[in-house]
Amino acid sequence: MKLLRLHIALFICLCWVGLPVQTSFAQPAEASTKLAAFELKDQFGGRVSRDDFKDSIVIVIGGNRSVSAASEHIGMEIKRSFLDNELLKDHLVVSQKGQSFAIRSTVGKAKSLQKTPIRIIPVADVAGVPSPLRWLVRQSMSSENDSPVLLDWEGHFTTDLGFEKDEVNILLFSPGGNLRFQHSGRTIQLDQLKQIAAITESLIGSMAFQNNTSGYER
Image 1 (tube, one colour):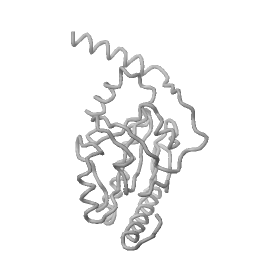
Image 2 (cartoon, rainbow, N blue to C red; image 1 turned 30 degrees about the horizontal axis):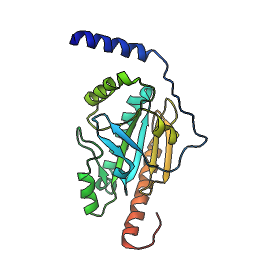
Image 3 (cartoon, rainbow, N blue to C red; image 1 turned 60 degrees about the vertical axis):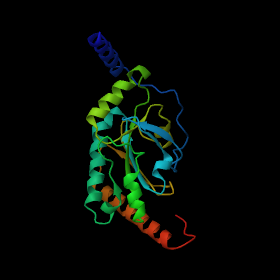
């Protein structure tokens, strides 16, 4: 019986892979320049919302299934550039294996040291995946990705942020949720990595100044 269910699931999965993905929501006239309220789950079942990244510098990286490998590679390049930076590596919050973004112990440590956390958030645009197949996607991603990835089943989050189809999308938001950098493509160049680092350093400096003064606007 178990073998029969597996064969049926694989048959459905193969049929779906060969079909074009269609979504029912309309494209917005303009992409949002703010990281608005949202609530998504990662592949481990952890429920994540905008509040989990409050007062953090957020870098959203993601796209659809056609760019999953490129998205992971670009995320690793950005992470590596931060770890090579003496200032940024002390602010970078790295999720542990199998740990949800909602677990904020490392963020709490950063806050206790009055450091602005940097969160790199992978997002998978999985809109159009039939509901019966979602468990297969979650299971596959859980086995292939140790770090959490937010799953946008309805496509609202990625659409609101103006994700380009079949491209890796990179968006950097200030702790106040304002968009400071945006790029789409399947590769990332050294000058773009330097630009992301420079913007992040500037935001950290602004937050440090704000922590020591009153009335400073982010």
